Image (cartoon, rainbow, N blue to C red; front, side, top):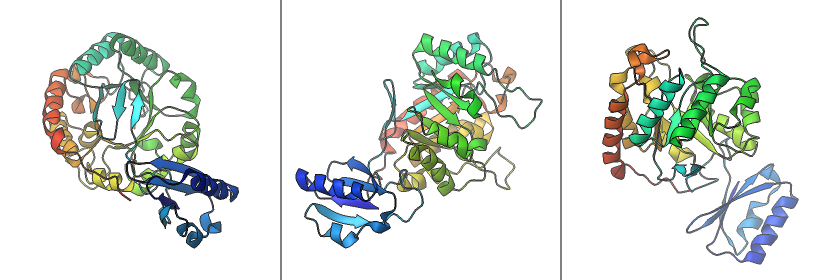
Length: 339
């Protein structure tokens, strides 16, 4: 349930309302906007007399949220959520490039790529340390050593890092990781999501290859229900009957998700298409659709990459892509901050 308050509500009346609602066993989430204050109620709202609340002088209107996701719902939180890591912001008009290799290979490789993508305007460094692979014989990543190398690159460039967690047992390795990524295969690993809800650091969740947008938001809800409201949604393509690309990039997910939720939405055109030649046009299209950021795979020698070389672009190609995207961003901001 959402209670929308009138502008500049009486403080004493507001405090009395909050105390009464909390006495009913409800948890309150208050979002202060420029023109109105929204109070979200979590819990068994069947005990609430809507007509009684509507009759209060400080209340503009009351609405029940029908969707099963409450914390991630834009009705609950009209203003865009802004994720901040150090000086880097994502969401709410703050566009970010997240760039780096699919897999961390050597210190020289990750540090060189980190320096190149930072010079091109990337704000966050990505790199796989633990790699979920379809084949058990494929390179599985360097594990904890990969995270150590990412931290070396962070030390040299100042870029915050994001890398993927695959299992709860790996959590101790992620103490110094700035953003934890939950991959498509783990989107509905609910025990993992619950545990990440106890952390106080951003979590990026990739859409599962056959998941609906509501299911993606419900995965975000698992994290947020634990108290961690720093969640980023990532569209990385879904599995369809089409075989010309690795996956089918659902760009309609951007406006749909942003109308449903206040959480930032990032697009990964690298995994979506699986082809380096398609990354730039899909990145441009994602920015035009209103995405809050792009996750791009960049490798200094794609032909000899240990993982996903065909979809990786060179640092020079990334620099050109980033410049093109920056040119169109001023025309691609849409306002979803409404109930």
